[in-house]
Length: 454
Image (cartoon, rainbow, N blue to C red; front, top):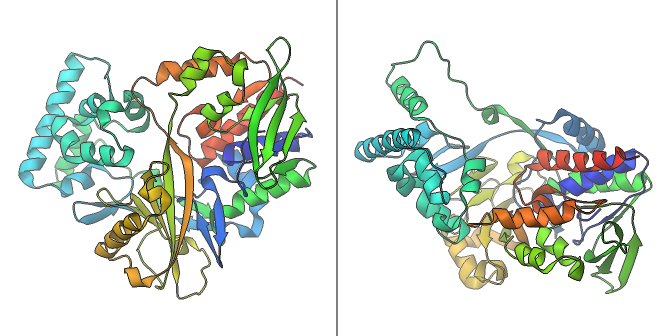
């Protein structure tokens, strides 16, 4: 098993419970992948906001049993700052229009109707994310709400982002539904249809008083208890194939603490590490065109500024999204039950997208001051209230669905699928966007495919 995020851990757990001997290699000092947490000083800091949903009952019941008393239930309370006000997250169209003046609102609604009518009469596949957003929302609303934020978040304009990202991640808002919602606000309600709030608005999440680190730690301990091995600080270096080039026979890795190179024989390989890194482990066993395609599969880096703040409470939510700040989300896990020392302090998880080696990634003074200034502007905390700054980083935050990435992904996946005993899955291994419970289900499915052979 390569990679100890939610997907890899759950795959290893599934196999271990079935009596299989599993070795899991994790390059970090702790398991959890993007859902991991780290202890810095006397407090725990999460690599982002990560809490477990209970939508997949099988996954949830398994994790619930493993976490035992360390699991706590947390009512969802997420917000987004939009047009000077706070709205529930995910942002609804009705909330968006509250932030517009009547003239802009009318212009956007006319544009929405016009573009949806046009594309209904003359359907076509969007060539990029910009066209996809315009088809969904109309050009005025795209320019007003999406264009600048998308560019700021990804570091390039929507014209360089594949339409696949939009069409697979963003819900469609039909013109009819929008009009019904607007009329309902003026008392003109459709008696045949009853509006239902999103299930997310009243959802219960699952967390720990030690933060995100608890779940992966406890799952790893259970895997070890079942007689298998979880090896941290293990950087995958190579995958050995048989003479026919059809099956993996071993994996080599380097211990990042000792520098020692080690090898493990294997009957199967499930990889959840970034697919580009996984292809690199095959070396010349992967054809040149496949290796070239892997270079197109890039990821967006993320740096978390974990702040210990001399303030009992900083925000009135579990987390808040911001559209025009030096950060895109601020979480306060103390509001979800995280224990903080000293008790009259709080911990903030300030999330930023970045590039490896830039000012945000390095924690340069210029980046810190920009973040601190925006935190103060938002009334979250003042610079002199910040006691500690802890950087948590990953170069593999979000798969980038760059323009034209699809055939390159297909070529890489086809190469892996042609190997009889190798799978690549999860967010990084599958180059996709599952949330935590869906990633775990992907891991279970990969494990089940192995079990079905025996």
